[in-house]
Length: 375
Image (cartoon, rainbow, N blue to C red):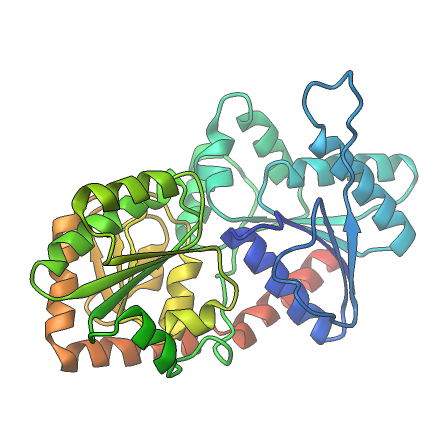
């Protein structure tokens, strides 16, 4: 198959999933064309069968704002016709699905066609897409797609309810490479972070308000009063300055390490004892899955698709959103019980391997492509 993939090329979960999917498809012999405004950050090395097409946005003085959606539709049209693509697979509804729909309408006038598959990832449906100005457009783009997938049952139900859509939505969970993300002994880095044998909590995200990164600092503050603990924060974004101020106000500068954006997360996650995810909204929780594959128990809020991923009292604990005291209590319970935290770590790894490994999920996408092409 010849597959075009459009995603946001940033550190967010939707871009990561789209990029890793494209890489795996290429390794299986399919021809993959990424169409985006920048090279996806996970495309760090050459892979045969992967091609990149940059979307150039016009800076014409008349346009006060850049017209990325239209530029993307134009580039999609160009790549579809020149490369003779079979499928355009767009990740994140806005504006990717809309741009694909526009390209398809132009192709129909040229007596040509293309199959569009839209994968819904979360805030494109639960937040941005619900704005009155966007809702009709998102609804149309989803209904006019030839196939629609979502990363969790929660997101599927949210989409059907919020948009009153009759289309069928296939649930295909996010995945992880468990041969890459696995428990490793990075003793040098661990000793650097915790030279006195402190316990290590880890969180990674894009530091948007919805991720509630400051809650991880509140959890650390409670835990550190009873057990010497460090908190490693990986990522960057709008709330980083707010978090840094919170750390200074609480006098926790020596206990919190801000690492910024990092590649090679598989080398960093394994030094932790527990992964924290106190999000306000989470359609699946890819960062939590990567941590589980590295053998970390996860303590999270009970929102979105997280209860589908985390098994309470087996791979970690789930608490009510915003209940930092409960999350801190769960953290202390695990840190004090070596046998239990070891059991949780093993079960986390086992669940990642047996339920969410890429070898299980990638074939689901391929089967879905074939199903859509046969329509």
